[in-house]
Amino acid sequence: MDDKLNTDDARAGKSAAATAFELFNEIGIIEQLARTMFEARLPEGFLVSHFSVLNHLIRVEDGQTPLVLARAFQVPKTTMTHTLSILEKHQLVKLKPNPKDGRSKCVWLTAKGRKFREKAIQSLTGELDVLTEEFSRDFIADLVPKLSRIRAYMDKRRDTE
View 1 (cartoon, rainbow, N blue to C red):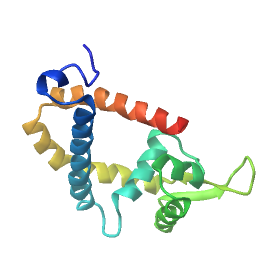
View 2: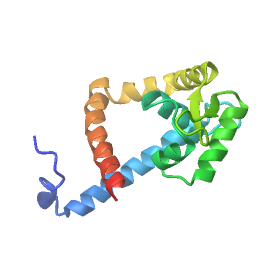
View 3: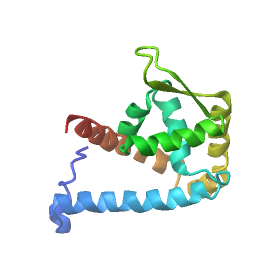
């Protein structure tokens, strides 16, 4: 199967760039809707950005510096520092001196942070069950590797620019 965006575009009368834009437009709208749904289920004062840091530390690697996290999330270091200060205030992360240089800090997830992440994911179960009533598990599962490929490609390009 050819995953390139230009295979059916000529028949549809669209350029490959127009189709790619349409894809990113849909992803952006889905992200906004998902963010709103998720934030409505998070404890008061917490945002998806807070959850995302906790999720990143589990998914990618615990013990990263705030600068590495800021780069990963493509936000200014001051924004990441603010996010981390909220997470630290609620004892969801712990900042410890970097063992490599002692000057910078490393961010470590606490047991409370791991529990918070799990509870946040569980809070979505009802909404996700409704979604899988409309769209089958197989339909969703088929999308995940395709979207992951696009994300990996964009991550790689970002890192080389």
